[in-house]
Image 1: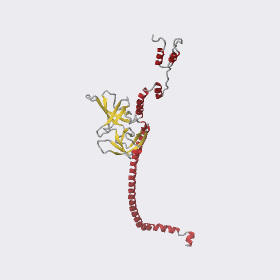
Image 2: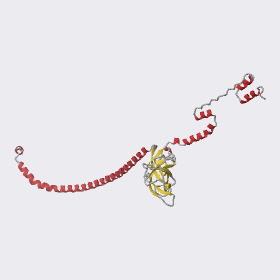
Image 3: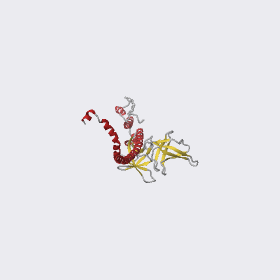
Image 4: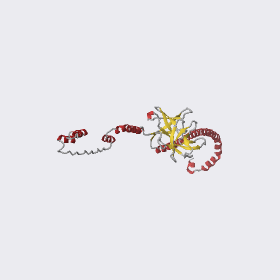
Length: 330
């Protein structure tokens, strides 16, 4: 062993012996390798099944999130449209959410999530991102009912944007959300595609809000008026994000009160003197100058008392002075 470690005499022998016994090691390891392979195959199948189940669950979750992403994308687009709509309205607006629809088939109302606690008032206009929706008709503490413009009991003063023709748009009794223009003469200048906006004549809706587009016009020879059907620009059956238009209510009724006050003051102003009337109306009065005629009385014929009487104001005194002259009876 010493000589083998020093001079490496048996290295070649060990090499050939290892080559000779290698098949024996291979055959001896076959059962273990076969068992390990079988266990590995079974374990890989179970792991693959578990991984497949986990991936399927992740796929479902990702698909759900993708659906939510599509919904959020569409919601974001709607909110952007709503923001653009709010920037085009001169009045102050408040965002509200639609939370309910009336179950009455003969009424077209929706419920919003703001009420008297948020200073909502009856008659307040409601719009969506595309046009006029309706107005508030009932206010509750935490919610409010909105009557849609397509309700048969609702009328909206409108104006054709192309030529300024004024009309009234009313809702219909059917289940469709559409409007009709009443009392439109057959000779009126109205065409399919005309855009209708609020005219502001009702003092409820501010002027310039989009209402609808003329969809069809039918002229009946036996009727003096045409049948005009209008499609609302607002997405009445789909919009859930709405805007409350907050107008300046402090000036409501101010003009009639001023007119009444002026009417009540007119008789009083007429009954005043010129200077007083001018003072009441806020103008500067000019008092006319009255020229008093000078009477020359002869000193030899009239006594001193008569001259004194003529210089005093008053017509009766002058007559008495003339009667006291000598020879007045002649």
